Image (cartoon, rainbow, N blue to C red):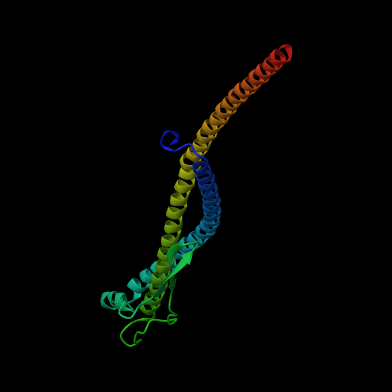
Amino acid sequence: MAGQISPTRSAMLASKASLKTASGGADLLKRKRDALIGEFFALVKDALAAREELSGVSKGAYTSLFGAKAWDSPEAVESLSLAGTGDYAVDMEIESVYGVKVPRINIPERARQANFSPINVGARTIQAATDFGGVMDAIVRVAATETKLRRIGEEIKKTSRRVNALEQVVIPGIEDDIRFIRSVLDQREREAGFTQKKIKAKIEQKAEEAREAAAAQSHGSAAD
């Protein structure tokens, strides 16, 4: 960059302003990255808890399913797949976490038991349908948490790349420009000082010669 910049005082001021802006931007990005890392590790705990919950409710649901198969007819067990699937819905919103758009999912309250008629379906099948409704809720929570975790992780990588670009490329390049401009200006100042000394010496020499000529002329007039 130094070979492409004009070594002037105005360029020096502009480069110093750019350096201040780049350094400030790097500091802001590092603070953002640190905040996102803190959020990321907090979400890791939530994601692990959601996975653990899913594992637990899945085991309970499959235990209920095995019991239903043992006591109820295949038709009754198959009918549990329709339990509440037609009206299952979640409320999803987009929120911002340090500038990162992430989903926030609100899972609606579900009935404690599936809406089956005990006349046609046994109690174990009803319990299995209810338990698998809990599995569906747990899956949605895992998906929401891990989606949020993934997006924040991607933003951490992106922010780290921007910080590295500023600290390893942009800022060193601006500092090189400043050193180049300063060296040229210092060289010009030394040359200007040397030129001024030469001019001053010539002026003093001419003044001295003029004084000597005037003194000689005055001495010659006095002799006459």
